[in-house]
Length: 172
Image (cartoon, rainbow, N blue to C red; front, side, top):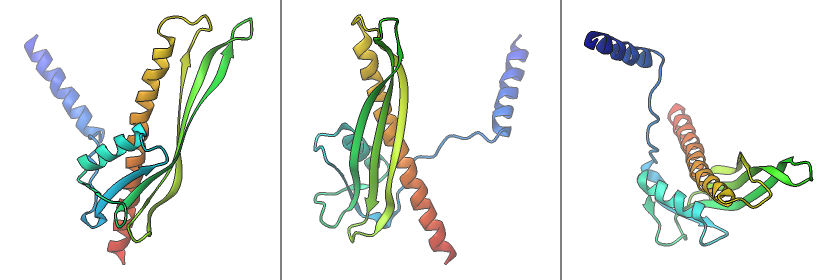
């Protein structure tokens, strides 16, 4: 029985290695990026706070002022609940929660690192119209999860743009 477990574990490890699977590397920012400031229209934006923490974990130096700092600008954030299913009385029972963010990344000299672009996410959730216990908390859990996913998505786009500009610079 022990040999079977060892063989099965070895087979699983080999099949995972053979398929090309590997963990995603952490975001690494170039050193010439300088201090980074995250700005948003809402000064208390949870997304802006999340992005600032993630950039610090990636090695970015937080900016004390935004004058000559690289700026990750969250230009807009929009949440929309769209009813997608109704009951026999015409009351919404299921919703699609949509989250859209427009952002850009500019250096202190106003040169564009990542041009303005939008990221959109959506999740469906059930909310019975009879105001049952827990229906509001399901939406709040989705909001938190979507914010974390949005932060990760924006950072992946920044990483891809920075990697592309580094590769283009090395070819010249």
